[in-house]
Length: 628
Image (cartoon, rainbow, N blue to C red; front, side, top):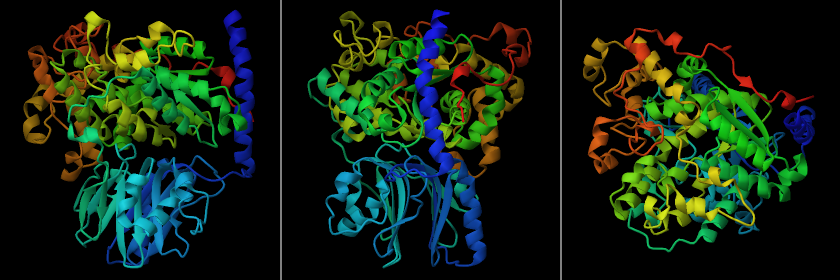
């Protein structure tokens, strides 16, 4: 009874805040400056077709991105150039539609993203007249003043296409790490296509590819140019001494920067180090923000897992410690299996690790959006910056350790960034990732890797520098055992039987003969397991083009390593599985993928391996139902 009473007391403020939050949307009278929006963009440029039929086709393709921006849509046509936009309104839902323009509308911009330093940038142009309060409008004016050289001035996440109608040229750019997704394609008619997701252009382009992060594409040269050039990109070994207070301050600034919102928001909380730090810092700094003034200072947290999973237990403990209003969602293995096709369609990959982790996140995002929440803050990126994956225990020296972190950060757009963005955007939910703040990355990647090395004899576990930075005895951010909890990959932490169930399901649908012929059916990135083959079949049904299969990375991996890092341990080449539990001798619950589950050996069908609870997600927070 005592726990229930405490929860009831905690729920009073959230009831009130969520109720107030939804009411202005219904009445439509929010009067605040418009700023951040996440959405879907599609541009068709130089298609030599100005007909109504072409316009209708562009609108049809743009609607494939509607899940990314269910609040409004827009299309700007200038001759044979089309800029379409599907809008998810996070700030000022009542206005701020795109495309955006300069004063005389000769510069047109369609943007997916948010620019955190837009107010500072606006002050540089007192002679310019801004048409809206949108954070993204500053892009048009920066281009007027600086041409193509302005992108590095932006602090934020973004993918944009800018059309200069004065000479019919255009540029496109993507943020430093690739937090927002972007694809580029070319049509037989000479057109260039740019889309937030592959499904917006795959049927109409002769060739398409992933738009590289940190790059700009200009129609004047018809080529890419890398605008993001931080010191760490060269993979030179840094030598800056570790300063825990500098690291802590940089992360707190990154979190606070992401608290600008005019809609309900919360944090994704798995109970691991990264999400727990995000929750701790957010709850500590929320009180002084405009968001808190509008909706109250009590934070909402969200977790998903199989019944009894490691994450659910740890997340609840962190939520209780921080005093957040905690929403716990359950799913069964069968729920996840039933969602696999939808997940692959939305995240646009056949990578095994990404699909395993995206499915629980996809299911959770739907429940979060159903509560009226439109933005969440998440913990992606920390493992790449600090060598948090368990295979880093075997790094032979500081040089290899640092270079592997560089490789991992550069590849984030193909894995965790893709998952975090697309699994949430599938339901019109925006995710923000403070660990991948540009300034914070600079600080984290400048630390001498000697401090990041995992040294059990010295009491240093994975991500020790981050843990130590927030180990505050006088004013603790987290309980000690959470601060020093071993790394769990998301697909493991939601429940170990999740991955085991996926493997069992795939084994029922992929035969030995199919695997024998895999190299002939799928010569590129040939699947080496039945689970990988199963995902590949689904992917190819949605995206049959050769260009599509080339957008997905391949190669062997153990515990999410790059192919290069497998060389660190001879044992790993025989134990290839992206799960963290494949790190034999490191993970406390390590498994041997070669071991066949007894149920499979006995011929048990996967249905018998599945938790037979009601096949709907359970929200263990009934008192948090949003009242009208």
